[in-house]
Length: 533
Image (tube, rainbow, N blue to C red; front, side, top):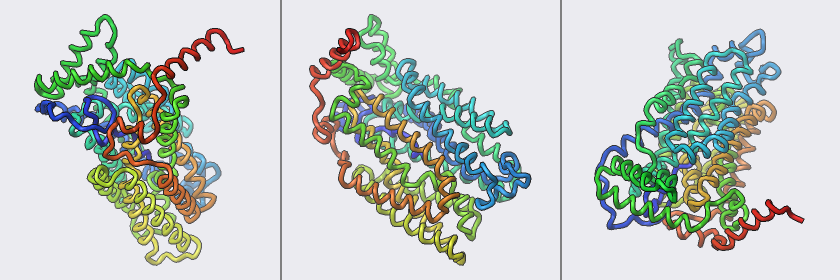
């Protein structure tokens, strides 16, 4: 799973409108009284549901008879029902079919989301991302050629990547500081709800609802994408983005008025809007003292480099927990394990545990801290995944099928509950807390890009793993990865909960002085202009 995407900070900064976390809220700040902000957040969170629907429909859709009849390369489509009887090339097709959405999202995060969000605006980026998703989803539901199908999956991924990049950023920029953290974690909750909705709808064929076939399943992300395209540009823009766009330009006053109008709608009263506008302008002026970060800053500045490595490593580590092995191919695995109930029903049960654990994460993330949840989640997943490997061995190799399928289901429920409490949402909260504003967009794009690139790799590998080393070997592989994850977090990942943004330099080391950073930029420009001897 892409556990999704950057969720905004869990401890909001005093200045409003930033993506930064940490810092107390000013006692003098007037209270927001409007309800518009809740409509805005509720509407844009449809994008989180879109993401969840996209993540939740593949596992069940590829098991539907219509999909097998359309894409199975064998004369007898029932050969594709069992892993052991897969025709040549079918496992590779499933690998690419699953992975191309993630690969497209990787390119969407790096090359579509940042320039559109930075130049045109956050809402415009959401519109473009959803429109591209529609362009990919429609042919995905209509074509019957496997290459056309895979191309449509890639295009849909481009749009999903752009949406997952900008949507949490927009939420954190418009949400009131007092609830920015909860709204950030709630993004993960809405994504899991989308996954649960997709999983439940995909059970309909099992219950005899014949019209809900694989095309209907693949069409699920289409509906929230259309809703967002129709309504997203009706909402006020990010005040912080507006001020940044107009700052230092001849028409700066125009930007002030646009930001003031947006804040008045979002906060509901003039006092709160004016207070927040003044804070935002002060913060924009402070940012201007340090030159806008460049890509080289991510690696030249030792403090920022350390944060980039940690943020990207956590995303790769999340994917190597094995979560996508379960979410993308859960029913296939459960069918291989001879589960006593329908594998689709088993997948619904697993997703419900994920939802419940996500709620617990939202309630505990600030009380227990990020590091504690990551360590506890890794330990719980390791125990359950190791147990799953043993039970799967008993089922597959020793042919012990009396009751063992339900034991495996219980272990997988414990596994995904541990994931939801620790590695589901925390992985998106943590990176959003550690980067300063001058490099935040670039740094987060590398983090989210790593998430999708790792997602692509795992989505491609899982069918091949199951085919070559079997279910027990696949579970054992991810159990070993989880042990490594626990060790990395224990030795290298510091706690950021209950720490202010200014404390991040104390945690990760002081940044390069502004003068040195500027001198390095000048030196780079001189070298590029005059040549290096």
